[in-house]
Length: 257
Image (tube, rainbow, N blue to C red; front, side, top):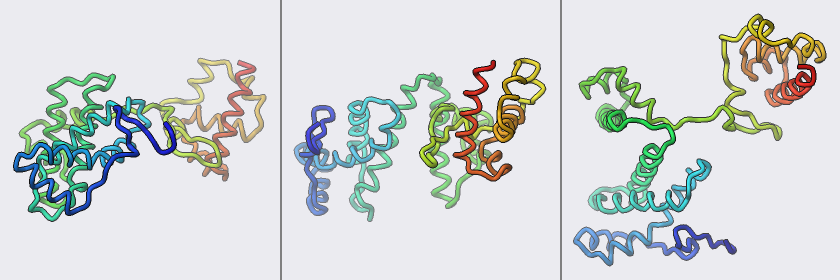
């Protein structure tokens, strides 16, 4: 990387061309008539669009070169299927095509394997959902989607859940005052009670070493299964302060357990 120069798949992104609206229309017409040179120039002139889309996926740990190549496939599909008679900007049409291609790639290469039949059911459900939304102007229910597919509602729900990207309990949600709030900080588990913890772990001594407020936070968080936000509202401080106090209390307790 040098200055604003960034190379992806051997392409110097700082040198990518841009096309005027009139040139874009001219090239689209020629490309749809079978002019390969016009199609190549059209693709080259819209690679910045692919770059802007793949930035949304940069924090997923995927190889950016791979995402760029997949995004280019989506771009080419968009260019080949774009209807010049529509009063729609080319970028408006192509961006969903690029995103869709990248999402299919991520789903198909997910570490959690989903059967082909379940993926096919999910993709059919998504297509039916879009069709019904366009026809009615509102989001269809699972029951409506299942009826249109002539499938069971539970099959539709399971297939759609199967293709959702998993998240980690340690994924950050937001930052407050320099402290990162994670997914696990927002989770409530009502199955955990104080009695279960006391019977399974000898922590009474460790709890007695804490200040009253810290002890209250630990009891509410780990014995009562309350979220940091609920604890913060209960004792009248910010969630970030609850997070700091909770971490400090746990460090203190570890010395005595």
